[in-house]
Image (tube, rainbow, N blue to C red):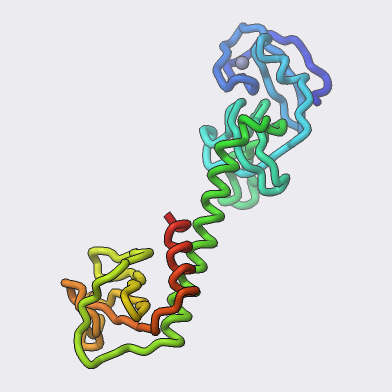
Length: 233
Ligand SMILES: [Zn+2]
């Protein structure tokens, strides 16, 4: 909570730490010191200056515009909570001895914990990202497993028909995918970049070709691939 709130007439223009909008010279403002830094408010925004805001977050900002405005909702890794900025401010920091190298904006915000409704979209997005990351790790693990257990049949160039899953191929001749077909599961790696040795390719994909490892069909691995492919989207 801010201590020592004063009513003042602004001696120069500034930015309200409550709403982020400007005030002009001569305007009535509230002035409070917090964290060693002075902050000015429109009188109507002054409620924020006295509202309890239990979370204090400070960081380096690239510019003044990167200082979050009141109402900004974000996830604080340190607090492991979704917070809402109640009021924020910034000041330009410069260490004269470092020749300007050690300079920039220091931003700080007083925050409250978000309501469930406010936190919902951010938590859902974090959950989705975590799910996707886990699915990606599972996909890599499955490629590794098939390439370790399987072999690269080279008796001909294979044209694969079947269920194609977790396809990450690009027009540049990179990426990978799985193919589940009767009797076999394939891990296929695009191998068609300039500089790749195309003669190694045993899978005909219509382009420069790919390298395919295969294992005999396995129910458990097939369902792991399907589940990971679904979750990675
Ligand atoms: Zn204001």
